[in-house]
Structures are given as structure tokens and as C-alpha cells.
Amino acid sequence: MLKREDFTPERVDALIAEARKHGPYDALTHEEREASRQAFLADRTGDGLWVFGYGSLLWNPAFHFEHSEPARLFGYRRNFCLKLPMGRGSPEFPGIMLALDLGGSCNGRAFYIKPEQVDSETRVLWLREMLSGAYRAAHCHMRLADKTVSGLTFIVNRRHSRYMNDLSLKDKVHLIATGSGHLGTCRDYLDNTVAHLDEINVRDRYLHHLKNMIDRDYPIPQKK
Image (spheres, rainbow, N blue to C red):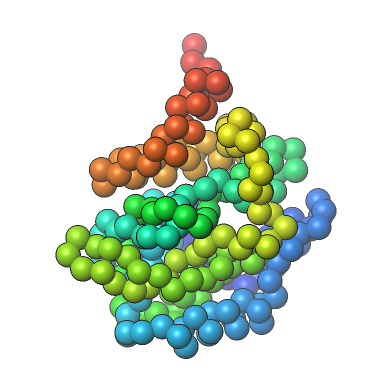
């Protein structure tokens, strides 16, 4: 589990340096990352900030928030489409990461950050989500139980070198089933995401279909 304290400029530098030992790795500079954060904050409305989570934020947010609740985001859908050479992937066992891509809608969870914590917690979020530039910070609208709110989510950058939109379902299943790195496995990531969606009574057909295929084609050996 990642902790808030894990997201520092020094840790980001170390991760990028480690990734580049194994080949080219596109990454933002600290200046580019901070300029992106400031540009988003300058355009937002309201004092506090709602953040939409669709993957690991559901079960490991690692930032401070006041409360959270189920939410639906329109215009984007979950898609395993980002090549993963580190984290839950490695040069020996590359993986693939979930992102928000264009089209459809997505159910997840909205996290509310209090006004006095917006600056500190967006610093954490940008170090977490904007390491390589594979995501873009986007203004969005989320539907909660009784209202619609505006806020922040991170969507895939289709121009990034790690974006892979031409993979077959079979290839995605293989990468999720076998991807592994210092943060764990892609399979655990998928299982955790599905489990936490189940907790809020959300059935994502795409994720459940992938999980069913992996469980069928890559069964976990039973312990003797």
C-alpha cells in the first residue's frame, strides 16, 4: 500500500532514474508537473475539490480527504491501455495499466478535499498521477446521489509513448495476468479494483469480463 509520504520529488526522481536504466522513459520535469497543477487550479471553480477515483484511488487513495461517496463520470470509460514497465510491471514481466479513455461513462468514487487542504493534496496527486505525463488532469462533472459536482480526474494522454490502443483482448489478459513489479502484480490491481467496485454495488462489465478470462486462462495454482 502506498502512503501519502511516499510521494515526494526525490522519490519521483528515483523512480524515473530506475526506469531509464532499462530503456527510454518519457517523464515530466518538476517544472512541467507544477505548471500543469497551477493551470488546473487557476481554472477550477469553488473552494474545495472533488476528485474522481476509478482504479487504485478506490482502495489506496494516499491523500487526505474529508469524505467520499459513489459517483458517476460521463464521457470516459475504463480501459487497460497504458504500457507498464515499472511499478506493477518490469522489463522481465511488463504489465498494462488502467486509465480513463474517451467514450461512455464510468462509475467510481468521488473524494472531497477541504479548501484548506487543496494545495497540499493536489501536490501529492500530481506526484502520484503525473510522473510521466501519461495522464492529463481534466476538469469533469460527477453525478453523486443527490447532485452533480465539478472536479478533477486524470484521463489518458493518447499522445504518450506508453498509450496502447491496438492491443487485442487476449493480449491485455496476458499482460494483466503476468505483469509484475516492485509494487505487486497487475492481476492484484484488477482484483482489488473489482472488489472495491463490488462494495459499492458497481458491476463494470469490462473489468469483470477481463477478470473472468484471467481466472479461466491463468488459474492460480492451489496450495498443497
